[in-house]
Image (cartoon, one colour):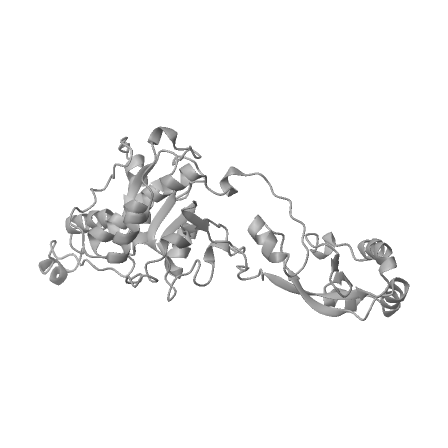
Length: 366
C-alpha cells in the first residue's frame, strides 16, 4: 500500500503562464469533411506556430465534432474573404470561444486532468526523477519523515530535516540548527562604534524566537553551515543518519497528532536494500544551497517557506500534515508548479489512510 501521494503541479500557471487560454472553435457541420477540415486548418492555421501543438485539433462529443482553429486575435487578423472561404468550403459553424490547456502535460496526472477539457497529446519522457517512488523508496521516505516528526515532538512545535537522498544522511535538523545559531549569536562581538550598546551587550540574552526561523528556513541555514564547513576543509560526518549540528532533543513534548502518525508509519527498510539517487555534488559551480536535497516537514510550508525552497533549489518536499490556512503547496498557490519560476520541485504528502487524525477527533496541525 502506498505511503505517500504526489501533489500535482496542474493548475499552477503563475505569472505569465495561465493554466488555460481561450481559442476559437467551430463545429464541423458535415462530418464527412472532417479529414479535409483537419488538413486545411493545419495548413492555414499551423498549430505549432500558434503555440497549440500540444492540442488535438478535433474533439468528438456526443452531439458533434469540434475543430480547434486559433486564438481570436489571430482569426480576426485574417482577411474577411479567407475566413469566409474556410467556413464555407469546410462547412464550419460560426466560431466561438473555448478554454483549452495552455501548455503540454508533463505527467500522466496532468494529461488526464487536461483531457477533461480538450484532447491533448502526451509524450512521456522516461526520467527516473519523475517516476513515482517505489515501495522501498517510500519506506525510506517514511523513515526520514519520522525524523521531522521527532524534531517536532522534541521542540514542541513544527519540525523539519533536510536529507541527502543518495547517502541517506540527515544534513540539518531544525531544532539543532536553532541551537547552533544561538551558540554563534552568543559568540558574536558587540556592535562596533556604539559604547552604549557595547556596555549593555549581554551575550547570554539571545532571543529564542525569530520571525524568519521557521523549520524550513532553519534547515536551509543548516545546509549553508555545511557549505562553509566544507569550504574550510572540514569533513562531514560519515555515519548514516548522524546529525552534524547536535542531536535531537531527548525530552518529547505532547503533540498527539504527530505521535499518532509516528505509530502509523512503516519501519525503516534495511539500508543495504535502499535504492540510490543522484550523487550530491557540493563542489559544482552550478550548485545552489540545497541542490539535490530533500526536505521533510511535519506541516505544509507557507508561501515564504515554499519560495525559499525554490530559491535554494530543493529537490523534493515531503510533508505530513496540510495547513489549509497558510499552506502554499496543496492548500493554495501550488508554488511548486509555477512555470514562470526558474525552479520547480516535486511535492509529496502522506496518503489518505495516514491523514485520519482529524477524522478521529485528534488535534489538527499547529
